[in-house]
Amino acid sequence: MYKILRKELLAPNIYRMDIEAPRVAHSAKPGQFIIVRLDEAGERIPLTIADYDATEGWVTIVTQTVGFSTTKLCSMNVGDQLADFAGPLGRPSDFVKEDPEVLRNKKILFVAGGVGTAPVYPQVKWLSEHGVKADVIIGAKNKDTLIFVDKMKSVAGNVYIATDDGSEGFHGMVTDLMRHLIDKEGKKYDEVIAIGPMIMMKFVCKTTLEYGLKTIVSLNTLMVDGTGMCGACRVTVGGKTRFTCVDGPEFDGHQVDFDEAMRRQGMYKTIESRKAKIERERAEGHVCKIGLDR
Image 1 (tube, rainbow, N blue to C red):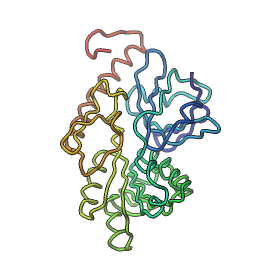
Image 2 (cartoon, rainbow, N blue to C red):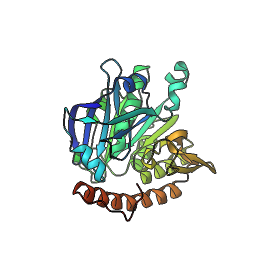
Image 3 (cartoon, rainbow, N blue to C red):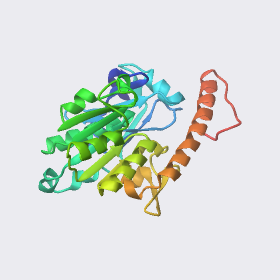
Image 4 (cartoon, one colour):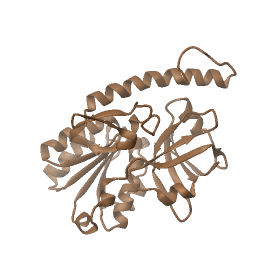
C-alpha cells in the first residue's frame, strides 16, 4: 500500500499529492510516468510524474477531476493508501542521456499548458541541477488555473505567463507569446519541449516548424493501460505506428499525426463517460452486465 503524505488544491479541480513510494522515487527520471490503482477493483490510471525525492522516498502526482476514478482519487486524503503505485514507466526524456557539456550549451524553451505544467517541472528541475537554466512558458485559461508558477521560477531561467483572458501575464495563446519572444525580444532557442493539451502541442509544433526548431512533445494523455498491451495509445509518428506508453511518452512533435491522435482522444472521452456511469452504479451496489467489458 502507498500512503498519501501530502495533499494540496492547486486550482479548481486540480490536486497535488505526494505519495510514499521509495522504490519509484529512487528510480524515477524526468519524462516518466506511473500507474495508480485506488483499490483492488479500481481501474489503472496513468499519471506523469510531477516531482520526486529519492532521499525522502516520495513521488508527486497532479490529478484533475475528469472521470469517476480521478474524482475518487482526488477525494482521498492524507493518510489514505493507494492499492498500487507502479513505475517508473516509459522512456525518460532524451536530454537525460545527453553529454552534460553539450546540454549546457543549449538554449531550451519549455511550453507548458494547463495540467501539463506539472510534468514540465521535474524536467526543468533536473536541467537546473545539471547547470542548464531553461526558459518556460506557462499557459492557462486565466490566472486562477495557473499551477506550479513559483516552483517553476525557482528552477528555470525565465518564466513567462500567457493567459487566454489576459488576467495574468501575456494576453493570448502560448504560440503568440513564443512569436513575441523570438521576433520582438530576440530570444534564440535550439529546442522546444511542449507538454499540454493535444491541440496546444499541435499548434506549438506548427509554429516551431516555421522557425526550424526541434520540438519534443509528450503524448501522456493518450495512455490507458500503460504497458502497450491494450493498444489504445497507438499513434503515428513519421508514418510508423508507435505506442505512447512503451515507445514514449515523448516524441518528435514534427513527426506526430496530431489529427489522428485527437480523433482517438475524442473517442476515449465518450468511453470515459460510459465508464463513469458504470462505476457510479457499482458504487451504489448495482452491477450492470451490459456495456463495457471489464
